[in-house]
Image (cartoon, rainbow, N blue to C red):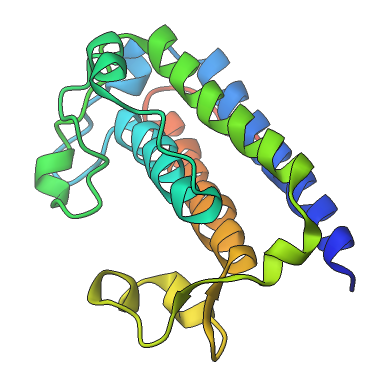
Length: 189
């Protein structure tokens, strides 16, 4: 399979994934997103922000472009916890709330649009570039992407598939399940 074919497939899959996030947000309001079910259950606000913000940060490793999220976005979005939560407990992150859903949606769209634009212009040969070599640092060694990596380390292709695509699908699954807890249905079959 050629790198161009792989890149075309990645672009289509990322666009489809982003459309699921758009569809989810178009049918929810702050009461849905910030719903607190019970201790130990993360609100939809966590999954939405965690994925968009981790995507934003991971994109820097792939493209060299700085993350979009900054203090101005925090002020506009009004997150209860200004953190993607990767290194925090469920007990801490169950308190995540979004203050302004329109501002969050604008941030999310900016992150996703930048990724799609980058994929459209990416040289297919870049998919093979190693971005993190073995042995992996501790914060990478325990991740799913470390299990996927080849003998030389993590490539741009691994990063796109693990950090952007598969991670996004995981959190979309959480969102679809959580939608049932707030009286909304799933979005795909």
